[in-house]
Image (spheres, rainbow, N blue to C red):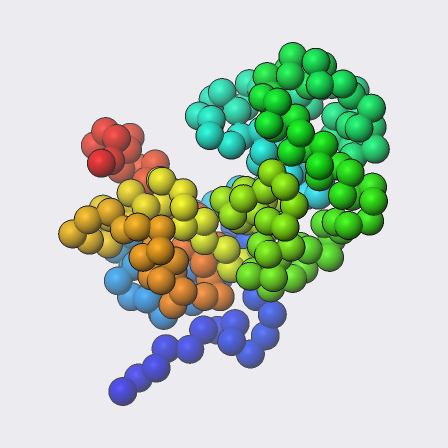
Length: 225
């Protein structure tokens, strides 16, 4: 019996903020999970998604909650131009009317304010959280009001470039798994978490692969069911 061993098993995993880092994780992921090879061959290059770190990055993720990519980009464009919006101390000086005028809901205004207060109060240090193992980092973030698992995971993946995150609640990833892995039905979130466990410590690269696969199949064959 041959047991596949990750090339990162004995050392620290590189972050996924460069094409080379993503490719290295994918190479090791293919050795661990050969059934993913056809998906990688179909999509070609899988590139990183890099957003700002820290407070600004979290604000951007919160901005995009439950919105289309286009709507989120438009709102973020307006919000990011507000004087002081991207720093916690100066964000706290903005009133609700100003932030909501950029397109934020009241809930998102309050969530970002909670993050700003946590940073200024010393309860949240993004640099420390970014360096934690996946489960610990997620736990630290979801302890704050307004941050759910999806928000924490997307922040860690896109902003902190964490190498081992898989946002199993993301609908596009669930659809990509259904289609790309030829499953009988779309997996539940719990089932997706179970599937992704065996892809550690390369779950972030797997997520990027699945998102790329979903985008390609959506453009080629219409919206995946």
